[in-house]
Image (cartoon, rainbow, N blue to C red; front, side, top):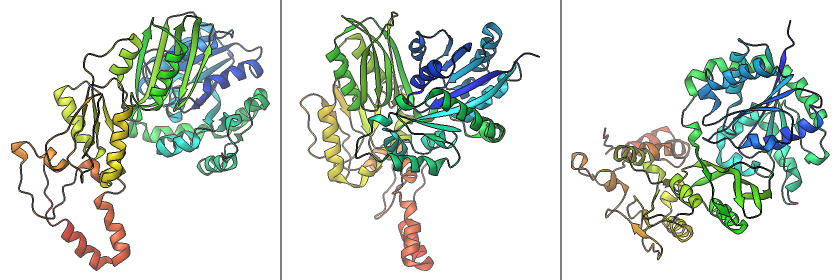
Length: 469
């Protein structure tokens, strides 16, 4: 009987250091083995495969999609092809940073029906410097990546400052995942072979119950919007100066092109190719032996793809539009944009500004001041308690609807016009999703006044409810 081929899964969020860890394992733990690597990247252009040129391994890249979308397609076929064509001792799988570990395990289970493979270990990489940020802004999705891990490896520990709390970071991870061993040394001090040995023992302990978990919810909770993430991938022959690249990194950090979590690629300079890495405000530019065409991928939310493309082409846009909108009307705005086939980017401001006019004005003015390559800024808002009063710019045209508030804005169609009773509330789906939503007031009212008075107060508040479909 043929020897079972080991599957090692190296997962982690965007920019966590998965590729760097794989390179370390190739040097220290996989010596003498015949290795194949399966890369799954989110974006139309694969980047990471070029980072392994210094190793004698077979690399297969699958770009433009999450693994869940390709469970029965290219991902499973990729595993089978690697086994049949190259008969490796071990296959390393590096999934996209927005992949879910259970989907990868399920895909391996499907591939195991066609070839002799078995999951050997599952290592999750967590960037220690970014953990406090990502745990806050990425919520349950990021937490689930950590809780699903079998062995946790902290990266960039050496970059933590004296004020950073490594013990607090470890405690936070331990609260999400009580069982997984955690490696928290700087990688220069960490032994790759020791890590692999621990990961193999831990991976085998939990393999069966993990696969079982996937079967119950895969058909129910998968969303093809990739958790709201988008990508912009492009190839470019532009010759950059190092200062131009640094300026671009600063624009990414200022959210000029949307909320960019990750950007990476190879760009041509007069001195040769450089490798560019960007992770949510932190960037690195280093010389690279890569000899192919310039290519770059940005990943994030509300990415202004057309503006990024023109930046890389070195063009100046004839007319660039950008919309800054309140998430209270997110569903309505996205529906209107789809119906009218709007192509310009739409960015949504923090939801808690809706009730704070002064902070709303300060936030919008700050965004206006730092935006670049925008000719017309659309603000689909009302006066919002005078939160839009006094906004100004000498770089762009600011367009605001002439209406009192967002209620007038959404009811501007004659077919929807209704008489607005005094003291009435109009609730959108976006409003009801917010933590400060009026429907959440009931719990606070109940706690403060008791059931009888709470029912009376809520009855008064909702007495003039109007449902529009």
